[in-house]
Length: 453
Ligand SMILES: [Mn+2]
Image (cartoon, rainbow, N blue to C red):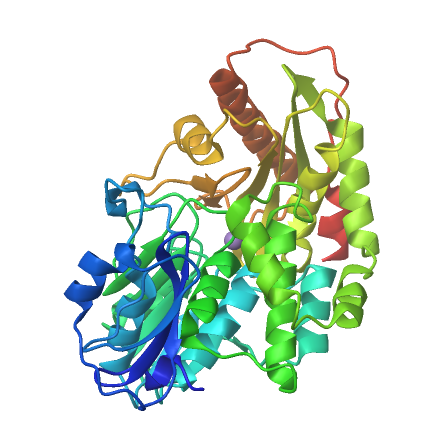
């Protein structure tokens, strides 16, 4: 049984019906002579008895699903027509033989890494050669473990690398706002072809194929593509087992170990579990925190300010390698009783560039991190927001232009205090509290890291 890449008009599929609507559609083999078209399927499939499997010859590739959440696609009967994976097939088919760059955010997480990998394997079936590329750094220990244990080939861009040989870009788990590569590719006039993400719509780039959903993880979307036949996983294929493990890790890490998972994530995890290497997953998850991360968490704990159940902390200067300790510190602050939202930020030194980088985590269901950060921190003169997010999490990056590169100790301290107070007051204003709090705070955070760097 083949699927996905072989999906072409004139080939045959089995439709698996549940609740009267087809859930899955995959290639069966050219054995039937019946030719019907997709419109016929759309209009008559509801008459097919439940659980009945029929073989049909589809004139063009089209899949349908009841999983789809997009309200627009819901028919009056509550049955959704699934077109996204079929649409992706068409786009990939039209670009056979090309070379694509799968662009991840500068600090890729398991969701991005696993989704990028899934895309690479899917695209390979269409004769498309993909490199998974990022510009920043993989610093979170779990992510390093994921990449090393799963032997995922990633390309880390360094200044001067040639990007011209790519025909198009693919953005997964980001919409170009969190990757320095976005501008580099734009400058070379290399266009985004595919955009798959679960963050709020960012309006930065558009692509020929877009699938942006408010869902727990991008890995959930790619798992759905796989389930719909774009890649047939096999337990005996080591890279498939690793991919399934990575996707499971991606989904878990985006949903706090499935605690925040909704139906889509459970369905995806349920499907993946048959292929997952549980020992490998345990190895990835059992990685310990680095000392730097512990130090930043300590800093965050010591200096946090709790107002109206928001726990806010600036942790001072950090080396770029330790950037991932910011979200980890935010995760940690969120574990405190009566805290529903944690925001941690610091100044990252990246060669001679500096930026304030922050992470937000929330368990408050009515709080939209994307809106919160956009409203609290605003946008650049070009209208580009400093922050953004998705359900439960957000982040921001504020470049320090003119004030960057100051080496004098006193000035460095003044600069930190300035940014710390500025950001804090903007966040507090958004929360709706003003004035100083009783919480004691350090006047001199983070100088240890600048000495070390
Ligand atoms: Mn994600």
